[in-house]
Image (cartoon, rainbow, N blue to C red; front, side):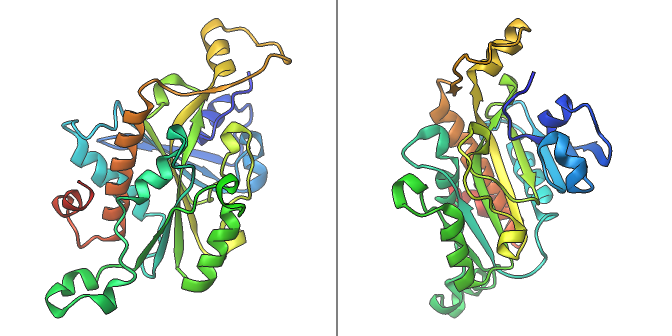
Amino acid sequence: MQYRTDLALESLAEAKERGGITEHRRGTAFTITEIHIADDESGRPLGKGKGRYITLEGASLSRFSDAYEAMALELAAELRTLLPKEGGVLVAGLGNQEITPDALGPRTMAKVLATRHLRKELSEEEAFLRNLRQVSVLAGGVLGQTGIETAELLHAVCNTIRPAAMIAVDALACSALHRLGTTIQLSDTGIAPGSGVANHRMALTAEHFGIPVIGVGVPTVIGMRTIAEDLTGMQAKYEAPDMMVTPRDVDRLIGQASHLLSCGINLALHPEMDYADVCSLVG
């Protein structure tokens, strides 16, 4: 069965060849699987490029979980390993704010702390904030809203502000029901907006931008054909139409995922801040 998924972990499970691919497991608050693909040729059976893919799996991303603080801190620690130690960072929220399953990026950006402007605007009494890492935040909408490819918009912004790295947050597709809204994928290979739902847009990669591009995402949709094949064990007819479906409580899913991602991103970018500081910012 050929499943439509953005998750390297799921692609690896279906791959017949694993040469040049290593897999490591760790984690406490999450079950963490890191997949390292040595080169593009090794990643071809997975449909993935050379790089690191870190998958964090939990039972729930709910802020009411007893392990929520531990999850936020573990997410931050994993994300920090993919970031350069110094320099400004552009955090970009991909997706359409008006379509709930696609709103993960914009909703996350609403709670990420932008600090690039603080050095000039804060007083001496607020020096702590002025010394934070320079972070810019952008949620520019999608091609159908703006007439501009997301990659084109972000490339223009990067040419102006010259960040040392970019974090791109987007909703993903998965092929397993239990991973909807419970799994986070981090990758140093960038991100291809819309690839999981066959709506391919210009990819955001280090090759295109000249800086590290870290992809961050949570699965919010799954193919109906994938569900049918998984439940029946039978291959769907090729001519059968496919649809992407999402949980009925997708509003709650997006709210929980965006809250945790924003906490993790803020903690990763600003080690001077503790969990309580971040919680006061994101609400």
